[in-house]
Image (cartoon, rainbow, N blue to C red; front, side):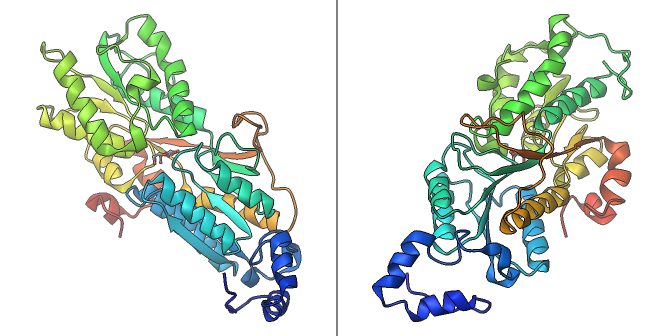
Length: 386
Ligand code: GAL
C-alpha cells in the first residue's frame, strides 16, 4: 500500500517513506510491519504518532455504541489516533476490519469479538507484527495471541441475575434472607449467544444459584428447557428471544398456567421476552424479568414497573481499563491484572482486569444510574439516550 504522509507521522516513518521506492524499504516493512505497528519503539513515540484500532461488534445494541464512544473519547483526549469500527454483528466483516487495522499500522488492538473463536488468523497477523491485543468484555478464545482481557466479573453477573429473579419473585429478600414466597413458581430460562464466552459464565453463575430452588420445587421450569443449548439466543437478538418466548408460551402454558419469572441475561433479550408476554395478554403486574447492561429503553421499563431489574456494568470504567492497558502496552510495560486464574481461553489463561457489577431495581435507578451521570432523569423518562 502506498504511503501517504499523515499529520503526526514520525520522522522515521517519513524517512522510510522517502526511501519507499527502494527495495530496502520493502524489506524493512516486511520485518517490522507496515505503518507504525508495535514492532516499532512505541515507548518513545508521541501519542499523536500512535494508532489504536478499536473493533466493536454491533451498533444495534446501544451498550456497544457507548463502549465505542467511551474508548474513543478517552484515547482521543490523550492525543492518540483511533480507528473505531463496528462490524454489524457479521463475523467476516469484523475479520476484515481487524485485518485492515493491522495493515494500516495499528499499534494496539482493542477487540470486542462477535464470535470469540473466529479471529485466530487476525490475531496471528497482529502477533507477527508485535501488536498487542486487548480482548474487550468478551474473551477471544483459542488463540495464544490475546495479551490482556478487560471485563466484569461475568460469573457474578449470572449470580446477580438469578438472585434478582429470586428477589423479584419474593423467594429471597434483598438482604439474602428467605422471603415469603414458597412456590411452586413457573420460570423460564434464557441464555446469550453460545459463541460468546460470557454467555457461559452468565448461565453458569445463574444456574448454580437457581438449581437448589429448582431441586426443591420452589421454582419449576415448565418447559423443561434447562440446558444452555436450549436456552441460547444466537447473536443476542431481541427478535429471537421474543420468538422463543412465544413458542414457550404456546407449548408449555396453553393449559392456563402462568409464567412467574424469566431469567434473561441481557436487556435486549428482556425487551423481546416482555413483548411476547404482553402480546400473550400479560399486563399489570408483569412476570419478573431480569436483564443486563442498563440500556436506556430497559431502564425506562424498570422505572415503569414492567421489567424487574438489570445488572449495571459501567462501560465508562471498562473503557478506562482498556485505555490503561493499551497505554501500558505502548510503554512496553505489563498492564496490571486483578485476575490471573479464571479466563482460560482454551490455549492459555489470559491475565484479566475484572470490574464489579451492580444490580439495579427500580429503587436504585436514581442513585446508581442518574446520580452517577450514566443516564439523565429525562433520558430515563423518555427511554431514549439524548
Ligand atoms: C455480552 C456482554 C453483555 C451484553 C451482551 C449482548 O458479551 O457481556 O453485557 O452486552 O454481550 O451485547
